[in-house]
Structures are given as structure tokens and as C-alpha cells.
Length: 184
Ligand code: FNR
Image: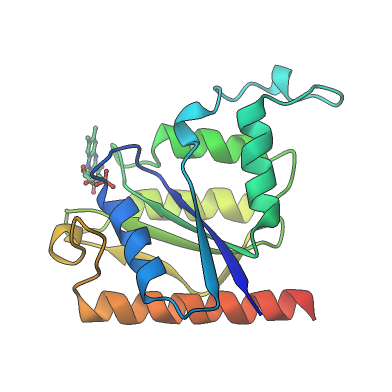
């Protein structure tokens, strides 16, 4: 059975270490995993409830995000921390999903990565609070903080640190188990 994972990097940077880490996870996954990278964070309009009422036709970028989430069996979010918080573009995307509910019971994993020693712990905690409010299903082994990320993931997207690779493998296994529990 194929497993469709949607990855979302919280960084818009071309050389993002968070995006590189997501690439590294896709590279170490077993063959029946399929990865789609959502890269539309920068195209989303600013969240405005006035544009999100019943009967409003959503902006094309919002419809696209919702459709990609709906198609995914599971989601992996990987984000930097900016000024002790979740990057605005990522929080903005999540705010568009509160009303439409694509995260409800969705098997989800949350990673934060930073060159700093704390690994983006504040953004990580904040993102978990938001996803929990949205009733995402944060899976076992689905929370990972990666400090000193520059020494663990190459810019080409290869995870060079063995304990990070093990943690990511366990995360994928938990996501797979959670998908099966959801379906059967
Ligand atoms: C940062 N960075 C950062 N790191 C951190 O651990 N805690 C923080 O609060 C912040 N704050 C912050 C603010 C701003 C404006 C910038 C530009 C950077 C550093 C950040 O973790 C680093 O730039 C990462 O490399 C960003 O992730 P990507 O883009 O490499 O995925």
C-alpha cells in the first residue's frame, strides 16, 4: 500500500535547512512512501475571516493547500523558529485550515530545526499547540527538534547524523502505523 506524505517546510529560503531535512527524510524512506512537497506558503493570501465565510469561493492558493492536505495520508511539518515563534507564513497557512478541517485526525509529525542549540523549541511547542487545537493527530515519535542542523543535514538534503536519521525513520514508521489505524 502506497503512503502519501505531504511535507511542508516553514522556510521560504532557497537554501533552507528545514527544506533540506525534509528532502533527507524522503531519501531515507522505504519505497512505498510517496512524498509531495507543498511549496505554496508564499502564494497564500493573508488570512482574513471575511474571505472565509460560507459561500465564499476560496482563493485558488487556499483551495490548492486544502486539496493537497486532503489527498495526503499524513503530513510532516518542518520549521525554523523566528524570534521565538512559528514563522508567519506557516501560521498563516494553518489559520486557513481551521475552518475547513483538513487537519482533523490527520496523522502528523512536527519537526523544528535550527543552527542553535535549542533546536527551535519555542516554535516547536507553539506549533504543537496550534495543531492540537486543530485536532491533528500528532503521532508517537512525531515530535523532533534538531539543534545544530547545519552539521547534521547537508545542503543537498542528505541526513549525515545517524541519530537524526534513526529518529526520522521511527517517525515514518509511526506515521505509517497511524495511517493504518485510521483506515481500518
Ligand atoms: C532566526 N533564527 C532563529 N533561530 C532560533 O533557533 N530561534 C530564533 O528565535 C531565531 N530567530 C530568527 C529570526 C530571524 C529574523 C532569522 C532570519 C533567523 C535562526 C534560524 O534558525 C536560521 O536562520 C535557520 O537556518 C532558518 O531555517 P532555514 O531557513 O535554514 O530552514
